[in-house]
Length: 422
Image (tube, rainbow, N blue to C red; front, side, top):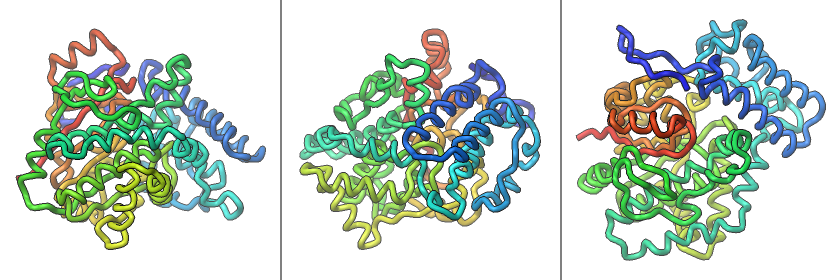
């Protein structure tokens, strides 16, 4: 694992890279990506040209130099201003965040996502997403929601927040690399509240739902903030489709039906990105699946569709969400929209990396300092699947470093961190 070093003289820290075999980024490129390409070829009837391009991309990204995207590739133009000095240089010299993001642009190019023809606009990850939504156990997995009827408001809120948090454990991309590195436990990250429900009582640095320790627990702080002020608009920067999105939508329904939010904006990806990232069609598919449930989750789906019809629930997207840029560098139009929100909810590991900066910060760096360039009140709900972490007590970090060296990347830890404006 990459060593955590102190910030340098100008207040920054080294970026995480992909060159060191001991670093998490190296494993993503040498283990996760090959597994992903195998799954894509199993799930999609790609021809020999597409398969050859995917294999060539794997070779290039592990041992070669960065090739620019084809000029005709839609969405390629913005990359000309996204650190273009990496073109023509070894992939191993690129920052992890940049390299991983660019890999997925090139992957879409390889499978003709941007090219006129039968594959144009087709989500290469669709078969994996569909299989997750088709799980016959999904309805019974949401039965815990029925048990919230009559619960005290703060307990119900906590349960829904933790459901949204732990839904992140179902990230398809993370499960791919888990299956490669530990086949015997390839299903061990499928849990979360969608398979049993959130438990009550989650002290900081103590066990959370599904046995995942909650290293930072700002849920009570968030409850006080959201319950003691006039309701406003909430923006949710989504992460994954499938089970995680289902849990996110249940939280959104709770905010709307309890009046904790006057409206909610779901920020989706403008196109497939990473493995299971949510697009507008994924929101649609999830609501269709949920609406067929005969329990409270089904009723929530129908309420959400009504909220969409009246404008209280909206979807938005921006090209920025498929970029390697940090949220501190977001464009003015997106910044203005998020700044006007009463609360912004940042879901998942990738959004966390972009929120605090994918650098080797000391883990005890204050969270508020790390997000100082992002406007408004915000909360991060994240299961740790990459090396960056901030806002944690030094003694907790020291203990975990000694007892569980891979705690930053193995999905075994989670956090809820806030930076709230008066």
